[in-house]
Image 1 (cartoon, rainbow over the protein chains, first blue to last red):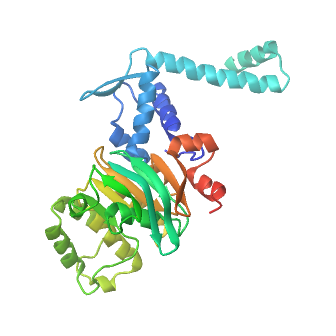
Image 2: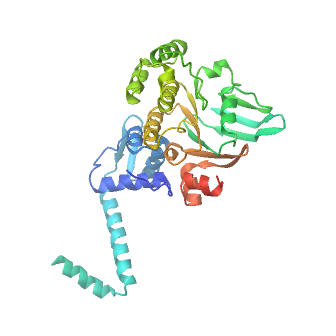
Image 3: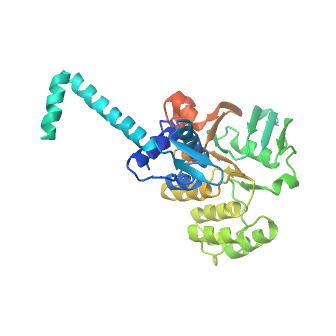
Length: 113
Length: 229
C-alpha cells in the first residue's frame, strides 16, 4: 500500500479497510493491528487509530482476545456510501461540462445498451 | 515512561539544550527531527545518562537515569565505537554474555536479515556493514526503551527500507522508541509522534497525523519548509 504522506495516514488506512470490505477481501475478521502495521509499513499506533475510528463509525466491533470484526450491516452500508460518492462525483463532472440531468440520464441509458 | 522537566544542557557558554519539557508515554514511537547541531544527540545522551543536565531533571519510570534504568534501555550511538580487532562473532558473543535481555533467537534472525558475515574482523567490514552490526547489537536486546541516534545516516537509500522494517519489527505495546534523524522521508511512517528540535529547543511537537493535517504536508516537507532545514 502506497501512502500520500501529505495526508493523515490513519485516514488512508481507514479508507483502505473500507474498500477491502466492499471488495469482499475482508468478510469478517480484520487483520490484527500488528500484522496490518507490518504489511503496510507503518507504526501500529497509527493502525490502532484507524481501527478506533472504524469502531466509532459502527463499521467494526472488537473485544479483547477476540480481535476485530466487520459488523453485520457494514457491508451494504459501505457499498451504498461508496457508490453514492462515485455517482456524485460523476454527475458533478458532467454538470461542470454543462450537461443537464436529463442529458446525463440519457447518456447512462445508452451505456446500459 | 519518560519525563523531562526544565532540562538545560550547557557546555561553557553554549546551550546545547535550551530548556525542554517533555513527557513521553510508554508504547509511543517518537521521531526526533532536527538539523545537525539541533540537540538531538545531546537529548538522547541525557536520557541514557551519558550526560547530566546542567539544570532540570529527567525521570525514566520515576527514576533518574542510572545503571538501573540502563538495564532496560538500548542505545544506538551515532558515533562508531566498535572494537575493530575482534571478529563479528566474538563481539556478538561478548554482548550476549553482557546483557541479560539479549535474545539469541532474534540475534540469529537479524544476522540473516542483514546478511552479516560472522567470520570477518570488524576492521574488514564496510561502513554499511558496520552500521548493520551496530543495529544488531542494539535491536537483539528485549529492552523497554530504544534510543536510536541517526540509524539511517551513511546508509544507501535501498538499505534504508530494510533498516526501517527491522526497527518496526521490534515495536511492541510495552516498548518505547525515540529515533533521532535528519533523514525523514524513509522513516516518517514509523513515528506516531514527531518532535522537531531547533537550536536546542522544541519548536513543533504533535501526533504525526495531526501535524500532516494541520500543515497539509508530510513530516519531511514540514521539516524542510517550516524549519528551513
